[in-house]
Length: 355
Image 1 (cartoon, helix red, strand yellow):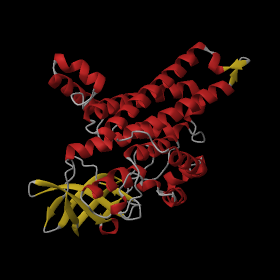
Image 2 (spheres, rainbow, N blue to C red):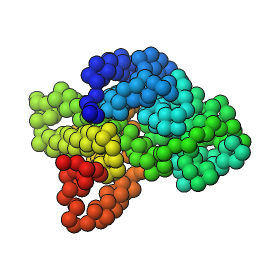
Image 3 (cartoon, helix red, strand yellow):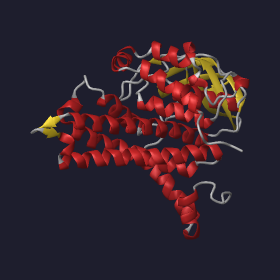
Image 4 (cartoon, one colour):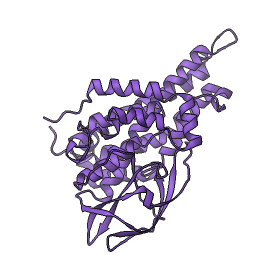
């Protein structure tokens, strides 16, 4: 029987590592330097980047549920490393094609309408935009169409010309240029749509973690900050902001859980689409409420709220924005028709096979 529950010992280990390494100062330094070597070494030292990747290709085993639980903690702690990219995306693609994963940080080419990559004679030429952490990783993995079928390509990052760029959170989202770079290729059953959904799932889980941390940070601040002789959390207007922030965090958390469970069990297209649409929306409404509850303190560089809010603003548009996934949900509802609408909402993508 397939389990959807993460290993508790693994989660406890991951939590301790993130608490010890992802301090305010470390996250700030990572934005300045483009890398957090200490965080990566600690996380890699206990195998967290390769959880959920089969041992046969160089991973550490474990389930998808395990990997997503670890990723959610990374979102809570604003971990400035390519955790999602290394295992859940690059590792997943490589494993699907039977290619070795390697032991260093890796990333993926998300795929942009501006990309101009072309394959010829086993070599890649062209430019790809918004590649996470390309300036810091050892391997770049991508999904390419070759001869009418999908293949996974793997190149050494040192073979790419990298132009550094940052997202709103100060995370590297680089431009890479390839000039006849040799690529290791192998066929896969993963297509572009499945890859986009997998990427969206990673962002949903990261955002669920960040929203939870933001809600708790806002509650703690307003409970401890006093004005006119009482905590600001007792003022009605502030309480309204707290409720909105907590509601968004809870809603996205539930949606992330549902999408994660569905992904473990099989087709999760509807759940992922709904969760990403909700998370992208909450990135606007929850951060607005949190910043309003904090007042001027929320705008200071020396306070940790911006580590969470800027990541939420950045992640909301990665692997499809709110409108992209709302359209997917609407399309699925129309295709299901009136008689299947409730089963679609209640049971999700695999509604016909669930009892």
